[in-house]
Length: 91
Image 1 (cartoon, rainbow, N blue to C red):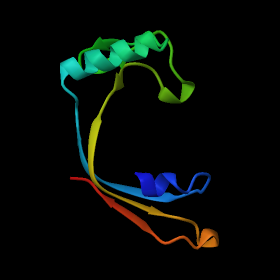
Image 2 (image 1 turned 90 degrees about the vertical axis):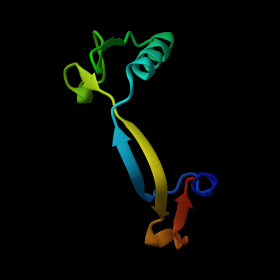
Image 3 (image 1 turned 90 degrees about the horizontal axis):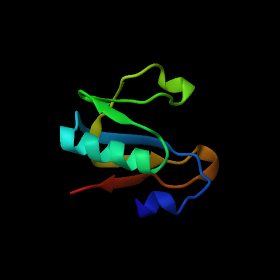
Image 4 (image 1 turned 135 degrees about the vertical axis):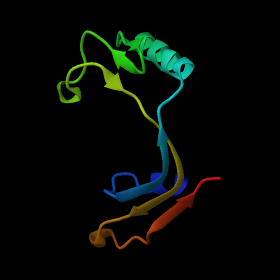
């Protein structure tokens, strides 16, 4: 992602290609623990998170979590920047 990071402050149109899946229970538990350490009291309920509060835009619990694995990312700067398109491929 270094190529994208060099253009700090630029608005990019991004496209990511890859696969999405539901994470396994141990991964959810680990993520919930990290959230709790950061101050959000998340708990795992089935295959989702619950907590007494979240951002208003999140809607009501439970909040389902997805894992994304990207194999390709494209970033294109606005025409005003005249920056060349950036393509990143992940192995």
